[in-house]
Length: 125
Image 1 (tube, one colour):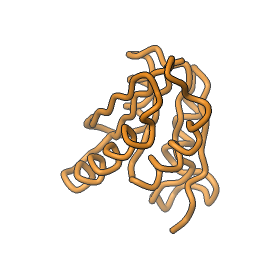
Image 2: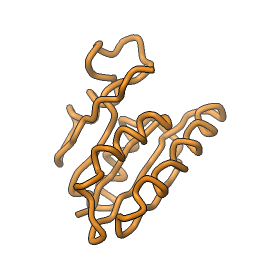
Image 3: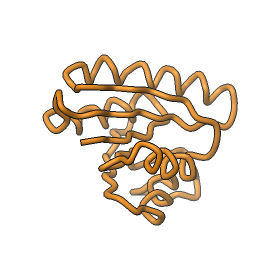
């Protein structure tokens, strides 16, 4: 199985890794992507991506990538590129226009989905 993970923070990556624990196996591949639009976000993205290979050490292949652009646009494009079987994203974002239960990126990805999407709750700090 090919999983695509979209992340924007260490906390989101950790929550998604918790979800994948016990699901993703040594036969699977996980690609973790952080989409950024400025240098501050790029540093946060690098930190978020560092978590995945450690937390998913038993998964067959774990790749990480920082992409420029809006996550709601970048993630579906990457899903097509890698032919992902499942997209996994966090439930919340910092966007004030997002609903209380679902972040704007998760909402946009769900609306544009052409493959299964799992939205993982991210615990509040």
